[in-house]
Image (tube, rainbow, N blue to C red):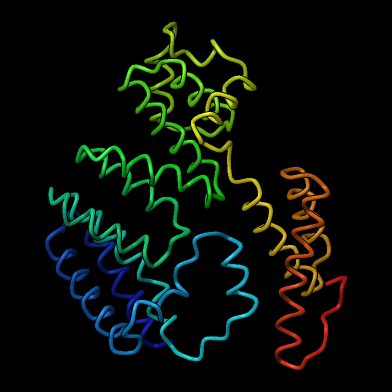
Length: 292
């Protein structure tokens, strides 16, 4: 834990330097921290396969790790702040105008926390700036599989809308903007796009919600990450119930039900309980209380 505390203290120092405009010393500190952390990781966990427990492509795999895996090493104490380190480093490098190095830093941030949709979208913006639209769209699409925040979904929809506007597909741009607006989350990029398209063929008011979702579905763009969000809520509800906070557990379960419906909530809860039973069986602790 001492190693993690030292890193977090150093990250706070670097962030203070960035906030005061002292970019060069911030970059030097962050690059030194990154080198030290990666050396520690290489020494304690030398192969790519051994660090795969950091990489959770979906919330379902996060559930499996959280409920089943017992990692005896202290690598987690270094690993968890690494995404923050690389996000800070990318920010500093952007200030210096080194977009190539900033892109590499954000790739590392995503590596250490694949669920950080903010880092994914920032990386998508850098790819867009560099003219790599395929990477921008791929990262934007991946957000729909992971996002637990409407702000991230709005940004992803806006990325698709800008792409469709740039490629002359106004109806699809209108569909993306319609879906982004429906999330009711203030966003400066979305506001600019809505003003830009007002009264044009890309105006989202030219479509219904159902038609917008149908068009984007044909493009392979999902409506959102409701199942992922619901499972996250239910995991928290299960923990709340286990700790005796029934009110919170009920509130979270109701929110999950509103997202995906009662049958899906029942199936997801069973998934969580199955994982708990596997843990208990493996540890010889018996089956957990079904009401937990």
